[in-house]
Image (cartoon, rainbow, N blue to C red; front, top):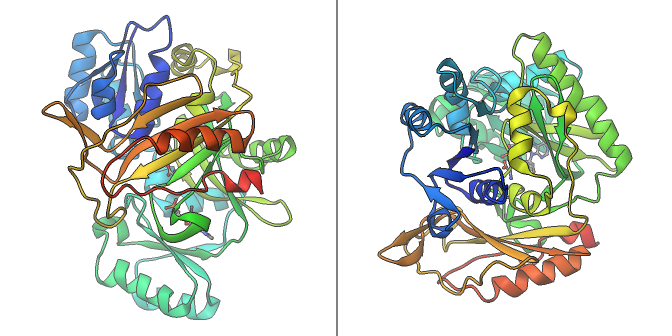
Length: 421
Ligand code: AMP
Ligand code: GLY
């Protein structure tokens, strides 16, 4: 069969890489892809962006199923469009994608269905928002309602920061329509974990757990980023924690969406905060896989992913049992100079070693220009090492990172530290 992966990041490179390993797959197309998908002889990169053009391509090429990586086309209704044309696609509809595309939708959904999350209120009036902050004190968290490419959350440690975040979003209109409404919520302390499942509308299949590293610098210092690295599995999600998250968060979410008349299909990603007493709460939902979490997760998946996806599209995920590599995978992101505020483009990348069973390099912001590989975005590469311990996996990943060169490369040296401590 032929499969199409939509997107251009490290996540999509990893998904396509895994799908191409299936003996049942004839061709994996990636649109629009990146330098890595272009250089990978097992993948075919196509320069298409718009949902309508993608649907035409899928129909013309007789592609069996489409997998969507990023949230933007999902929130724009690519799944609705494909289904209306009878094309198989794995992802949530525009309506179901509101779990990610509207924080207010997600919060009121969680409140209505008794899913543990931070206490909150939604505002479009600045004066009311300021008064709520004064009444509740800091630390407090301000979130733009809509999609803001990972920049719409301010964890304010002081009242002054909280008030200025409100002014930035509501008065200065920093995020346009996405920030015309804001959610203000209680600050939660604890350790974060990424809990991702696949859902076919009724059956739920959990993927391996993982943990992201949001801050730019070692020891979780510096500005927030899209994610500087991830590892899998996350030790904090013990078997009993896993059962509890399924019971208290994932199952009620899938059942609640069905009951509300918006059945959820696709990847559901619950960003968890687990407090010191071991209580998990949902910080946010994403309606897609995580980036960079996908890279270590796909490196550990042993099952035939194309077959899993077929079951996911056909509503038969209950017949699937996933098999995982028992080793730990550590994925280290190499970012461009100036990331996250103003990543520099055009730096020439060299030294990427060929893939070996213990280490693979996924591309994100790269492109091939006149035969040379160049940085073209903030997160450039994600190097994934596998090992019997977090330390061994780290060692493998960093050995490769040190062989790769581009000017101004930034990376953390401590990815996986919570798994070692
Ligand atoms: P997001 O961009 O939505 O992934 O959120 C960015 C980060 O903000 C999360 O990964 C958390 O580290 C932090 N965060 C979001 N909500 C809260 C909260 N209620 N309490 C503490 N930290 C939070
Ligand atoms: N790694 C966080 C995200 O994908 O949203």
